[in-house]
Image (cartoon, rainbow, N blue to C red):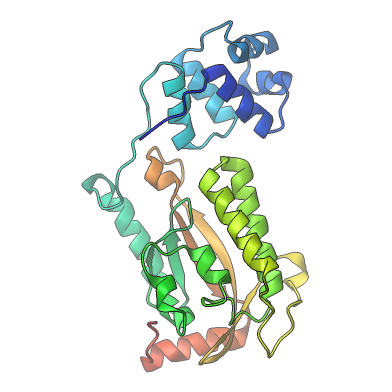
Length: 274
């Protein structure tokens, strides 16, 4: 694990500005003086380990970057980063599999902070039929897969709307995390949009968005048109970096025909793998 060599005060100031907070705003949140915040940012005062963790909590800094902040301040990292296959995360891994399996016959998958596919349930295979095998070679990036013309992009009826939703969501994640890999992915996906990507025949690229409540993904499959909306599940108050960056994306039927079709496919034992 590597960490930036920037001074701790500069890192604090960067995260404060990223959260659009003044020194006074942060001081009020952290119950310290604005003068103290100023001294910490300029290097006139050296923060304690406890103060850095306190400010990181108030600034909602990701755990990975909290470790970087601690190292910049001369302290050892606090948060571990275990592999999901590690014995210490066995219970978490089993919980993920339980959620994915329990969500069937609807699709669900687990991804890391860069939207790399970790695991998925059997129903996801229904969405991946006819996807280019090259895009399914590990590591699989779920966002790239969903928008690429050789992936789901050519099958999503409301592609323009779905792409806008994906890019806006990714930008919010970048704003929170300042992750350079996500920024590069956002640039790549914007570039793909500029080079084409019209909606497939059979539907308009400008679909209704359920009165602004959710953005559906309408997908042409060999079973017919399926319409989904998704929810994201994360671990509550994780102390491990891997768990803090793990998310489960669950797809729910956005209409009755989709729900009935998915149940019928599952009951009939139809082949749902890619």
